[in-house]
Image (cartoon, protein in one colour):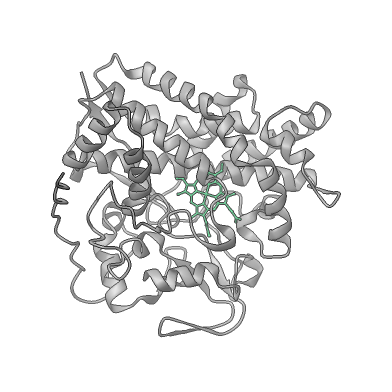
Length: 424
Ligand code: HEM
């Protein structure tokens, strides 16, 4: 049988002229022409971030992969030369919440990661499958009879929040509070000012932190079969997490696993709705009860328009060369995953959305020792979410012009504010 020819799609044209403006509204709506410019003209590019901090942006795939695994680049903000490091992660001003995986290097990282990995095993995630299915179905039930919905607010946003709450062991009656606090964190991020915590973010972090401290305390006296209990139980050569470490860990799981998954589902649905032939192919394979295409589709959506624009901060601990640039000790380095994943030197026709793509070593979950610990859970949630929606609402259409949609551009993440759809 003939393989159908892959659809043609024009490559994203790099912007012409001098260095493009980064981190504006327009950039958030479509950063790919600017990334094409950077890859071509300034693959390791020094820029001033909206916060005023100067940093290097790394945009080519080989440099990005090397930087992510380079032990001379530290994750610890104390290694930022000029001012206190900014991670863009809510809670960064709260010293107790700072000791988490994304902010530390070996040997501390090795010890904490081993402890969390003991609690967060593939088996934990697999046993969680029916629960993800239940949450997904309940959310779709909530709007399926309405003929229209905003898939960010009614679907992509609540799904990961309820999933992580369940996983951590937050009781059902408290989960709507979490939903509100997470909503505050999202609402108060201002495009153009990424990484700068605003009042609402601080309040939400305080609430979550207080709640988690109390929950950990309660669970210590009455361990269950949830992740927080596992974190308390986990020990490494007889060494346990302190309550503060467990709280920081629970917080980073919540933070790292929430907006990322919202955006994977949101950006992924948007990509499918705007690529009808790819979506039709996925839909017919699901209708035949096949799952192979669903698996490669989620990887391709992570590559094509993944939720994490830039990996979190790294700081040079010694002078080093990246690409053709000399990086000084203390300089922040930001690896632009979204740009690397469209690099034509690594991906065949990188601006084409091809759900069947097999040669796809994308950096959407990072690379090296900080590779996303939640990747199996994120894959599970995204696969269920996309499959359930396409099966149950097969005639889903976008209810707005793509140009009218607003994007939430943070320094680290990028995703839609709303995704209005119609269906019968
Ligand atoms: C690390 C992406 C979902 C927990 C990372 C990194 C990336 C990433 C790129 C590496 C950052 C760096 O090197 O600076 C994503 C994406 C997700 C997702 C795209 C969803 C689509 C999750 C979920 C959880 C999670 C669901 C947990 C519930 C973590 C943690 C780390 C991490 C704890 C730090 C690991 C370490 O430093 O050792 N993630 N993530 N992520 N992710 Fe995820």
